[in-house]
Image (cartoon, helix red, strand yellow):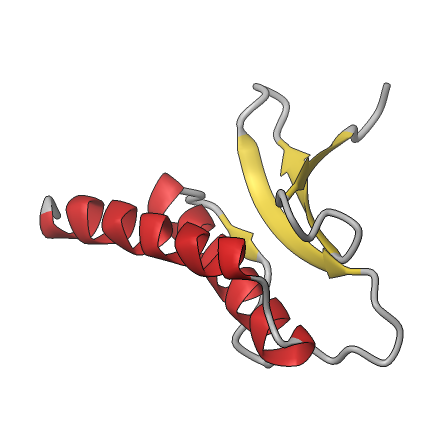
Length: 98
């Protein structure tokens, strides 16, 4: 297989948004591209692909942005608000270590 693409789906909005991950020859993630599958949906300019170095914190920020954008455009779901709280806790913990 040449240029395989790994796909990650976000629980609760898996039919709406996904992340496509490009792998380098050693199997490490070299970029993560957000993909939205809603017609007439224009994500904010802040939701952009991330590239090397891809870190857990960068990936988590991207996931948070996608969920926040989904909530703003769809009216949201209560469970996603809880997910955002968990993400914020993760980010506070890991960003305070740097």
